[in-house]
Amino acid sequence: MADPKTIIITGASSGIGRVTAEHFLANGWRVGLIGRREDQLREVAGDNADALALPCDVTDAAAVDAAFDQVVAKWGRVDVLFNNAGTNIPANTPDQIDPDDFRKVIDVNLNGMFLAARAAFRVMRAQEPQGGRIINNGSISAHVPRPGSIAYTASKHAVTGMTRAISLDGRPFDIACGQVDIGNALTSLAERMQRGVPQADGSIKAEPMMDAQRVAESVFYMATQPEGTNIQFLTVMATKMPFIGRG
Image (cartoon, rainbow, N blue to C red; front, side, top):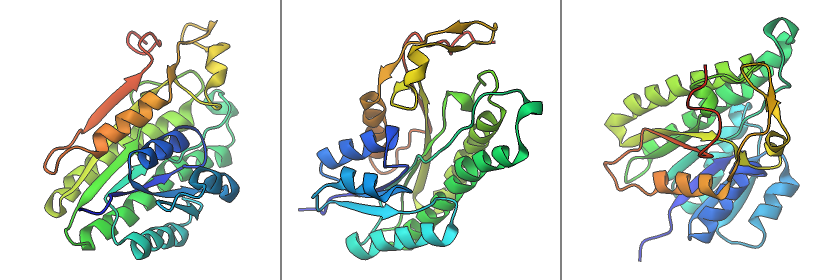
């Protein structure tokens, strides 16, 4: 019987990352849980021998490399990375955004995603059999902005470029890379959308939401494609959210 497959999930302590980690564990995967909040990671892991809490700041290259090395030491390989960790700042016009806040968003959402992808690529290139899969969390914002979202939108547009570059660079090593673009999944961070958020026409409106479990299922679908098949981009969103028709 083949060993269970192994996935590392960043931002695994809450939100989409946590729901996705729980879904993979429920389906028999080994899951490395990366996040800054150790207590919440251990809560997700519980007493499951197939879960490994890896407290780590994704903007720290040495810490990211060490986390991946822990997974390899414990389970031998990394089959999939769900590159999910991210942050945001309150909405505002560009002139009202502190440059340090802008840099913080870029550091987590882009640089942190690069560092995790870099570590995954290193491991996947060296392991036997060679290869693996990297799934980047893009966003609806990788396509169109919300009002006041210059930092987040810029970071997610950049993630799309990174996804394409990794997909191309990974071909010789059987490393596939795809992107899941998520819209209005119900988590504690997104709950405010049910109460009303700014629209492009200046109005404030509540937006439809979907169960975050649908995102976990989508990531699982991408992760379980057979060798030689890649889902390059997948958009999953609440059917009636105001995305199609924006602008």
